[in-house]
Length: 192
Image (cartoon, rainbow, N blue to C red; front, top):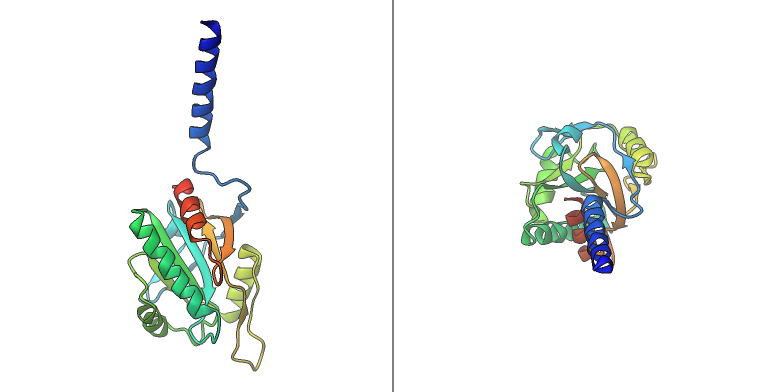
């Protein structure tokens, strides 16, 4: 009887501890994203305060990108649809333009429509200087964004970033090839 009681208490303790750990990813980066306020494809202000309390997935793209950006946007649209199919609520998708001079709200609207983005919870951002997005990406997302002088090409990496409700980057995934869709969806569910 005493052994049985110890087993029951042990099981209840494990269940209680596992319930307390829900909402956290193992080995999370926990890089804080600072307050920002940019312009979305609707020419409206959008920033960190609009994402408070929500899990979000971010990437860095540009509309004239000749190689990785179109597949990344396609992959993000697929991830967005999977989240919708899984009935995940309180999720946002954010694409930061790395070519803000060219990528006006109007250009981003056309690009988002062409790529079948559901704009109910996906914002394409611009409205900052080139150097600002380069610094923002490097300091907070630990990623390269660079537009060399006298060049139309913008150098950037092709990652998806999962950010929690407190605005802290939790995980980084490939956004171009071999995208781990199921893992990202599972991680989103864990953070919910």
